[in-house]
Amino acid sequence: MEKSALQKARAAYQPKLPKALQGAVKVKEGAPTKSVDNQEEIKKLFPNTYGMPLVEFVPGEETAQKAMNVGVILSGGQAPGGHNVISGLFDEIKKLNSNNRLFGFLMGPGGLVDHKYVEITEDFLADYRNTGGFDIIGSGRTKLEKEEQFEKGLQIIRELDIKAIIIIGGDDSNTNACVLAEYYAAKKYGVQVIGCPKTIDGDLKNTQIETSFGFDTATKTYSELIGNIERDCNSARKYWHFIKVMGRSASHIALECALQCQPNICIVSEEVEAKDMTLNQIVEQICDAVAYRASKGWNFGTVIIPEGLIEFVPAIGRLIEELNDLLAAHGSDYKDLDKDAQREYIIAHLSAENKETFETLPEGVARQLSLDRDPHGNVQVSLIETEKLISDMCASKLDQWAKENKYNGKFAAQHHFFGYEGRCAAPSNFDADYCYALGTSAAQLVANGKTGYMAIVKNTTAPADQWIAGGVPITMMMNMEKRNGEMKPVIRKALVELDGKPFKAFAAKREEWSKNTCYVYPGPIQYWGPTEVCDQPTRTLALEQK
Image (cartoon, rainbow, N blue to C red; front, side, top):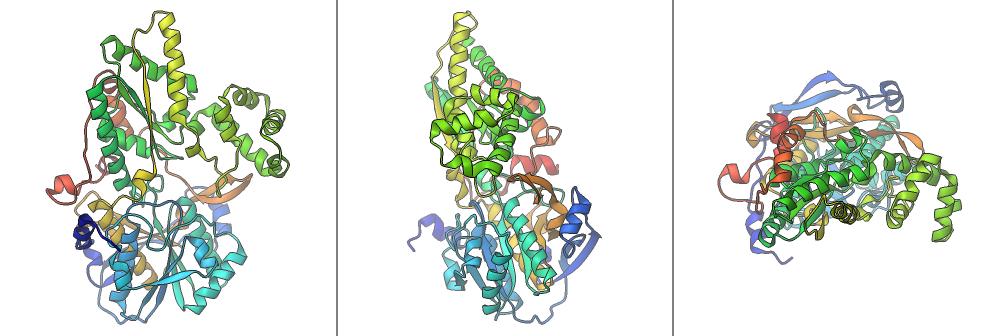
C-alpha cells in the first residue's frame, strides 16, 4: 500500500493509554444497573444480561491467561478512529497471551452470517494504525436480529474457536450486539459479545459514555471547511452560504461546529421541536438576520443546518410517523404504483392534519418522505436537500419583504453538504488515543468474562493517562421505541439538551453572531505541537465536563 508522508509519520505515533490499562488489570465492580426506561419490559426481554454492574479497570497482578480467539466487526457508517479500536484490541489480546488470534469479519455483521473473514496479524495491521476509514475489513448495515443469523454466525465462531465478538458501531449496531449477547447467554453457548461506542453524530452518549468516537475528528474536519467558507464569504462579501452537516437524529455536529466557527445562524433541530416551530418560522428567523445585515451593507453570511432538521419540525415529524406506519402496514400495495398514483395513495390514506402538511411541501421533499426507508426503518433524510429548500424559501420571503419595503439588499445563495468528508478523516490525537483505549478496554472485558457490555473510557477532558476505563451493560441504555410499526428495545439516542452547557453557551452568543461578522477559522487538525493546539477535546465535551 502506497503511503503519504503524513501516513508514514502517523504510523509511528504511539497512542496514549490510561494508567489503569498500562500494565496488568483487575476489575472493580460497581452498583447493579437498570435500563433508562421501561425497566420491566427490558428486564423481561434480557433476563440474562439485565442489571449487571458497572465495571472499572484498576491496576492488578500479572496472571497467566489461557489462549483465546476474538472476532471483530465494524458496523454502520464510518467514523475516524475505527482502525485504532482494532489496534488497541489486537495489541491487548497479544499482550495477554501471544497465542491469541484476532479475526475480522468482512463488510459488517453480514461477514459473520456469511462466514467471510480475514485473520488480522501484526503485518496486516501495520498499514492501518492511526489512519482514518474502515477499509481494513470494511463495514456494512446488515441487522443482526434473527435467530437463524445468530445460529449461522455461531457455526463460524465454533470453527475458528472464537471466545468473543466485538461489535464496533452506533446505537442501532450496539442494540443488535445486546440482542446477540442475550441470545448466546440464554443458550449457554459461552460466546461473549462486547460493543464499542462509534458515531460521528455524537448521539451515543449518556452518564457513562462521555462521547462517541469519531465525533472529535469529524467536527474538527467540518469546522475547518466551514471556517474556510466563512473566510471566503467575508472576502467576496456577496453570498449567503447554507451549509448542511451530518447528524440525522441529533444536532450535536451542527452545535459543535457553531461553537468552533461562530456562523451567523445555526439551527438546532431539538429547539425547533421544543418550540413547535414551523418551517416558515425557521425561514423568518434567517431572513431577519439577512435583512439586518443587508441594512448595514453586508449581503453575506453563513447558516449551519443539521441534516435531520426536517424530521424535527413537529408538523413534518407527525407526518413522517404516520407515513412510517402506513408504509410498514401497506408497503407492498404501494411500492408497485407509479409516482403519481403513489402520491394519490398517500393523500387518500393520511389523516386530515397530515394530509394538509403533505400537500404544502415542495413535491421533491414530499416524494423523499414517501420513498423507501433505510434498514432501520428511518426516512433517508440525507437525500433531502434541506439547505436548498430553506434557501429557496428565504429567497421567496425576501422578495415578498422587498415589495413591502421591509428589505433592501441582494440575496444570492451557495449550498454545501458536509457528510462523507468527515467520516474517514485521519483521526485527531484525541480520537487516536480514545479509540486505542476503547479497543484495549474491550479486550479486558473479554478476558474478564463479560458479555453484553460496552467498552467505555471516562474523564476524557483530563490528560490521557488520567482517563478511567471500564464497561457498562448495554441494557442500561435501553428503552422501548416504535420501529417499523412495532415496539422494539433500542438504545436511547442522546439529543442536544436545551438546558445543557453547550447549547446555553451557543444561545448566549447567537444574537451577536447573527448581526455581526464574528467568524472563527479553526484551520486543519494538528497532530504535532503544543498540547493546547493538538490534544484539545471538542468544545461540547469541554463544556459538558467542566
